Length: 89
Image (cartoon, rainbow, N blue to C red; front, side, top):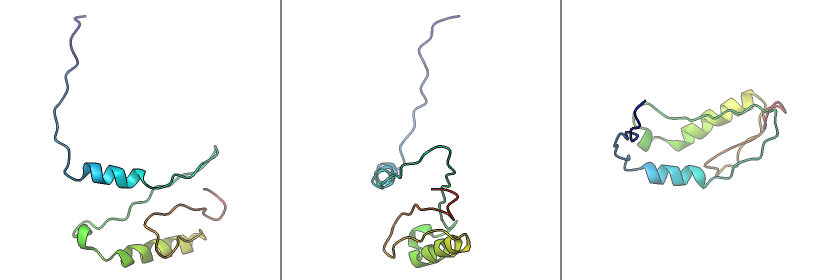
C-alpha cells in the first residue's frame, strides 16, 4: 500500500453557517439519563420560511404537544424541550 496524503475536498461555508451554529449552541441542553427517547423536531415551510408567521409555527407545536399530553413551552420561547406524558424527557 502506498502512503498518500489525505485528499480534502474544498468547500465554501454557507453565509449563515456560523450564525446558525452559534444559535443552536446558545440554547441550553437538557441532561438525559439512559435509557431515554429523544425527538428532534424542526418546523420549516418549504417556501418562504424566512418570512413565515412564527405564531403559526408555535400553534402547530402547541397542537402537537397538547395532542400527546406534553408540557408546553413558555409563550415567549424560541426553543423547547419537555416531557411527553412521562414517557420521555
